[in-house]
Structures are given as C-alpha cells and as structure tokens.
Length: 189
Image (cartoon, rainbow, N blue to C red):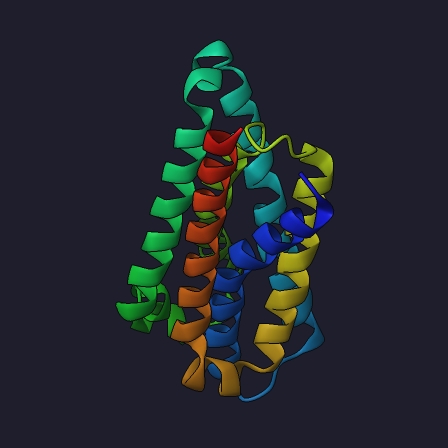
C-alpha cells in the first residue's frame, strides 16, 4: 500500500477524533497546554493502537480471510464510512450534558478516544488485505490523529459550530471510496 493511501486512510480515520476534540474546545473558555497534551496522547494513542489490534485479529484468521479479503475490506470500510456519515447527521452522546460538565476529565477524554478509535480497529482488520505495513500504518494514523485532534481542539469554537458534521461526513465518504477502490482493484486483477 503506498504511503499516500495510508495517509488518506489516516486522515479519514482522524476526522471523527478531530471533531470530538473540537467539541471539547468549545466547552472551555481557554484551551490549556495540558488539554492539548491529554487530547493528543489519548486520541493519537488509541487511534495508533486499535489498528494494530485489528491487524493481528485479522491475521489469525489466515486462509479464510484470503478468499474473501477484498469483499471484507470493501464491506468494513463502507460500513465504517456509512456509520460516520450517519453520525454526522445525528450526533451521538459525545456532547451530552455529562460530558460537557467536565470537558477535560481524564475519563471523559479516554471514553471519547476509545469511541472514536473503534473505526480504526475495523480499518486495521483491512490492513493485511491492503498489504499495508502495520508499524508505518499505525504510526501514521496515530500521529495524524494526534495532530488533527490538537488542531481541532485549538480551533474548536469555529470548527465544531460550523463544520463538525461536514468533516465527519467527509471522512465517511473517503472511507467508502477506499473500500470501493479496494474491491475494484481486486476484481480488475
């Protein structure tokens, strides 16, 4: 898998974390350096770790996956992308009253990081199918997520109020296109 494709996947997976971080930025009058560090470590760490877990879960299934890999990759990426598009139209409980009381409570940030990284686990299942190097992929996804989450946090008042849902929908569309590209590449060969 070319680095450009890994980067596109990383950005697509990072957008929901960026939106969640932006929502946290809206909830405080001032973003402190410790907020930035917590968001970068939590979101980036979970987004880097979950594809690794997905990768190893898929490799243990071995030959069975090889027969269906392109369909699995297309299906998973399409479902993940569709979920992101639906969530952009119907925001989840990430911005509930409880989450807004303490926007940077450690548990709140960890739960947001976990929730936004579940898509990365599913995407990790597709990495062996795409012949993607796991270390490079996980590092790229983690660093991209950390950077975009920090950016989202700092620009939260503007991004969350005007573009949040559109960014998540864009990430979903990109994942669907990646899934279709994987299927079409396999069927064409």
